[in-house]
Image (cartoon, rainbow, N blue to C red; front, side):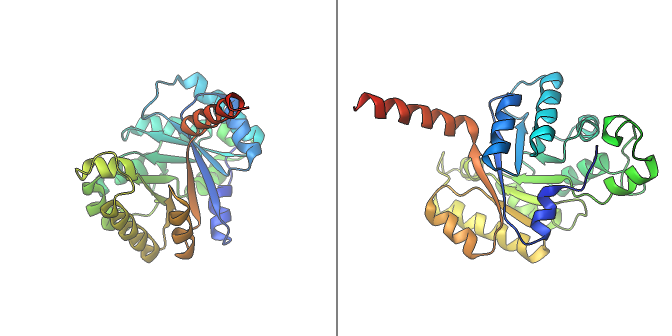
Length: 255
C-alpha cells in the first residue's frame, strides 16, 4: 500500500541515504540489498530486458525486506509510469534526461488531477480499498517521485529549468555517459566531468533539491560529504559482485 517515501523522509530528517543500481534481475538480490542496509534499489529497464511479472516479484521482495523500489526507464512512457506507481514503485528514474519538457511529461503521468493527468485504480496500491480514493490521491500528490538522471551536455544545460518543476524529488548524475557525450571517452574521472558534476550539485543545492552522487573514489566521497551531499548511489550490483567474485578466486589461487 502507498506510503510516504522512507528515502525522502530520511533526507528531510537530515540523514544520509544510499542506493544501488540493480542490473542482475532477482527478487532475492533485492532482499540481500535491503538486509545489507541500503535504502533504495533502482530496478533497471534501460539496459535490461525485464518482464513485468519479474518486476512485480522484485517489488514485493523490496516491500517485504524494507527497501524502497525505484525504476529506471529508458524514456518517458506515461502509461508505464502510471502502471509502475500503481504496482508499488516509489520513484521513477528518467535516464538521459535532456529537457524540462521530458520531465514535465513524466510529472503529468505521475500525479493525479489537478497536478497531473494520471488515471486512478483501487488495487494493491490502496490496500485493495483499505485506503479511500480521496486519501490515496491526497497522499500520492504529496510525493516527489520523479528523478531525472543527467548524462549529457544537453541535460546539464537544461538542469536549471528542470529544477523549477514541482514533483522532482532528486537529481542523479551519470558521469560515465556524460564523459562519452562530451567527447572524452569512457572517463568518468576526467576533470571536465568533475567540474560539470560540481555545477550540477551547486544548482541542486541552490534549488533545494537533493543531488545524488555516485562517488568513484574515496576522494570524491569525501568531497561530496564536505559539500553537504547526503544522497549516494553505491554503483551497480553486477560490477561489484563480479569484482568480489574475482577477488575471492584470486585470494584462493594465491594460497
